[in-house]
Image (cartoon, rainbow, N blue to C red; front, side, top):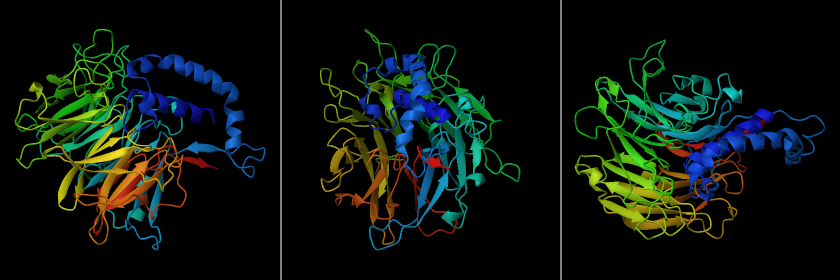
Length: 511
């Protein structure tokens, strides 16, 4: 029991340092770096409290028939749920497959790597499992070549860890997908380790690259811990609590045939007068020898003020159809003008322009809405839309949808008053998927909706969205932060429809 509570405390510290998409994190004080600096004191205080009170306080959370004098064994497994029924009809049975992890908040993030693999992170999983004092983080690599989604098992996944087995480094917080950094014809993957320490610089962050190779009986996945590299900020920029690599994108940015990496850190950047930083994005160059160890250049927000969290999320895609990839960067405290409060914003840098001269397009949210906490490009019919979460706009947050070419707002999605998702719940992630009739369904989750997590659905078009309802295909009762992460992973081998995977990283198994 005690180790479980330690794991929960460490998750809180992970979230204090890196705002992925958690409405609770977004309530913290503007100076997140200060919160991280106090992390050792927080751990000591909470450790003392738990040693005296954790068992007494926890006993009331479980029914009397379980808590009958013999304390139940509680295991924080985390988990994911895979669905293949996405229709909005309430008269169809739910069809899903649950996979539980081995602790460490399995299901914290979900990624589609390419047509052959998808991945799930357990950012605090230990080796061996459940020994939370040896938490390194694990990235599970699942093959798409299974005939039925019910055949997907935890033990069929390849597992990647930090090559140095660094502890409490946030390994797997995000993944840039696949790209060919050394231009050898094999896909490489770029993995975040945003809480990695360098010397006495706690949570400075680093980038871990796994270089691809041949697969075979002894190498079921093309990546391993033997062929890797680590990159981080140079001494010019690196500081304590940068959280560098909490966002990552990968592609050939400079056109030399080698894929490059852009890494974001919402607490990074030169220290400003009075302390604090703006957030920063750093460019790391790909070469025949792999990713360079340090950055070549950086991007900063337009106005010098701390607490803008620039670089908290990033995307790299061709959004205007000119054949050149464009960069989308958000910061959930970005300012639209020098004297305006920071409500959050999104910068778009068009490919083919000098990004260091500033963004091509910008859009900003309402004051205190924390606009840009999550950004995602989604397919809606034959169009690509940019979705942006503002967790503090409306009671349960708002998802704004834009034409990414022009940043013209198309429509917004909010929780209707007819649905009671609770006062604390707000959107944490979303994706789209097509139903059997080819209609696009928005799936939007809130890890605190109804306290323990829920997902909502609505049919959407490129111009509008219907009113959200509780997705009829989800289990009647959900828990464990269900809806914290959502990903359309595409089709499995021989499959006729896409699958959507929903994370519940805080799931507890009671034995």
